[in-house]
Amino acid sequence: MTITLITLALTIIFFIWGRIRSDIVALSALVVLIVSGILTPTEALAGFSSSVVVMMAGLFVVGGAILQTGLARAAGNRMMGMAKGNETKAFLLVMLTTSFIGAFVSNTGTVALMMPIIVSMAAQGGFSSSRLLMPLAFAGSLGGMLTLIGTPPNLVVSEELERNGLQGLSFFSFLPVGLTVIAIGIAFLLPMSKTLIKKQKSRKGKNKGKSLDDLVEEYQLNDNLYRYRVPAGSPIVGKKVSELDLKNRFGATILEIRSEKKNALGIMRDISQSIVSGDTVVENGDILYFIGKREDMKWMAESYSLRREKGASLDFYDIGLAEIVVLPNSKLAKTRIRDSRLKEKNKVNVLGIRRGDEYIFDNLGDMKLNGGDVLLVQAQWDDLLSLNSDDNNWVVLGHPRNTITKATLDYKGSTAAAIMLLMIVLMVTGWAAPVTAVLIATLLTVLTGCFRKVEDTYKTINWESIILIAAMMPLSTALEKTGVSAMVSSSLVETLGGFGPYALLAGIYFTTSLMTMFISNTATAVLMAPIAMVAAQQLGVSPYSFLIAVTLGASMCFASPFSTPPNALVMKAGHYTFIDYIKVGLPLQVIIGIVMTFVLPLIWPF
Image 1 (cartoon, rainbow, N blue to C red):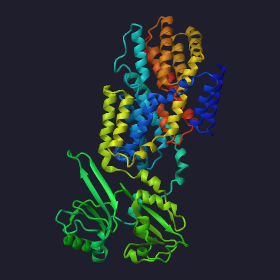
Image 2: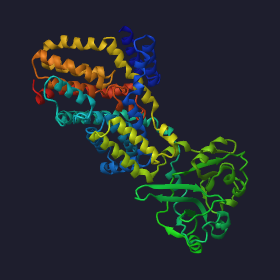
Image 3: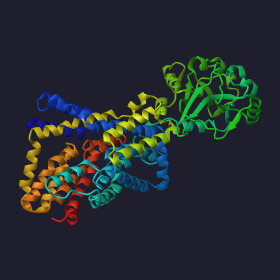
C-alpha cells in the first residue's frame, strides 16, 4: 500500500510540475508498479488493450478525416454564421450543441467529433480556440447526465438498483440532473474560460507563413484562370503538350490537368491532379487549367474545340504552392527561367516572381533571376517538400508540410459526414458496441480516401494522450489490490454516517469525485455504488439520491487532464497544463457537488 500511495503522490506532483511530458510520467509510474511487484506485466499492460484507448485512437482518425475533408470548416462556417461573429454566442453554441450530442453519444466520441469543428470555427472567428476546447470537454461530460446511456456510470448505478430489487432508472430519469449541471457549467465557465485565452495568444507569433489562399490572392492567380474540358472530338486528344506549343501560339500557361470521376450513384467523386510536362498526353474528358488573356483563351478554345466550364479556381488535392527565395550565390542567379531546369529537375512550375514590391507574370521563361527574387512555384506535394533539401540555391518560405495537413479534400466532405453519421447511429441504436462503431468509421475514412495517404491517418493520432490514458488505467488495479480503495470507502461511512443524510450524500459525491481523478470513472462507479447502497440502507433512507451522487461524482471530474478521455483529448490542442485543469475544473467540480447535495433530495427525496 505504501509504495502505491507514494507512486500516486509523486505522479501527481510531476503532473503539476509540468516539466516532464505527461506520458513519460505515466509510463514511469507504471514501471515502478511492475518492478515493485504490485502489478503483473499483464495487469500493467491491460490499459493498452482497453476498448477506451482503442476507441480514442480511432476517434482521432475520424476527427482528422473531418478536418482533412473540409467538413470541420463547413460546420465551423455554419456555427459561426449562427454565432454571428460573437465570441459569447459561439461559447454558448458550443456548450449547448456538445451537451445535446453527449446525451446520446459517448463523451469521448462527442468531443473527438466536435474538436476539429471548434478549432476551425475559432480560426474563422478570429478568437482563441483555447477558450472553447476545455469547455467543450466539460460539456461532453455534462451532457452525459441527460440520459441513461450518456455515460457508463449511469448504467452502473441503474444496475445496482435493480440488483437490490429496486426499480431501475429510465432513459430520461437523469434529465433534471443533466439540465441542472449544464446550467451550472455554462454559468461558471462563461467568465472562467477567459482565463485560458492567454495560452494561445502567446503562441501566435510562432505560426508564421502564408496559407494557400493567401498565396492565390497575393499573386491574383484566379483573375486570369480558365478551366476547359477536352471533348471527344477535340484535335488535341492523344497529343503531347509539347506538340501543341501553347505558350508561343496563344500565350497560355497550362497549370494542371485534372481528372474528375463519379461513381454510379453520383455520390462520391474521385479527383486527381497532375502537373503538366512536355510529355503529358491530353486525353478525352481531361480538365485543363490555363492562365492567359481572355482573347487568347477564347481563340485557343475555338481552335481546339474546348468547352469552357464555370467555377475556375485553384484547388489543392494532389498539388500545392510554395514560395522560394533565390539566394545571392545561387546557380539560378542571372539565369533565365527556361534555362534553369527547375521544371525538369525539380518538377515545379514557376507561376510568378515577386521582386521587391513588383509582381512579374508575363514572359516568365525569358526572365533572368536575381538573388532575392521570390518565386511562386507549383508542384506535387512530395516535390514541394523535396525543395527543402537544396539550401544552397534557395530557401523555402513557410512550412509546406504543415500546409499539406491544412489543405482540404473538399470533395470528400459528404463522405466524411456520412461516415460520422453512421458511427453515431451505430452508437445510439446499440447495433454495434461503441468501440466497434469507431473502428468501422476509422476503416471507412481510409478506404473511401478521406486521407491522401494511409500514413496520414497515423499522423492524426495524438500518441501522447493515448499513452497517458493507457498507462494511468492500471493504477486503479493497484489501488484496489493494495486495499487503498476499500480503506477510503469504509472510512467514509464510519466518519460521515452519523451526521445525517446530507453530510453522507456530500461525502459520497466528493469521495467518488476524488477517486475518479486517479482511476477510471466506470471503475469508480462500480466500486462506490454498493457502498452508497449500504450507506442509504444503514440510515434507513431512499438510496436513489446517493447512487445518483455516485454517477455525478464519477462523471463530473474536471480537475485533472487524465481523469476522463475528453479532458486528455483537448489538452494538447488547447495548450493546457495540469494547473489549468485545477484552476478551472476543480472549482466547477466543487460547485456542482455543493449545489447537487441540496438539489438531488428534491428530485429523489430521502
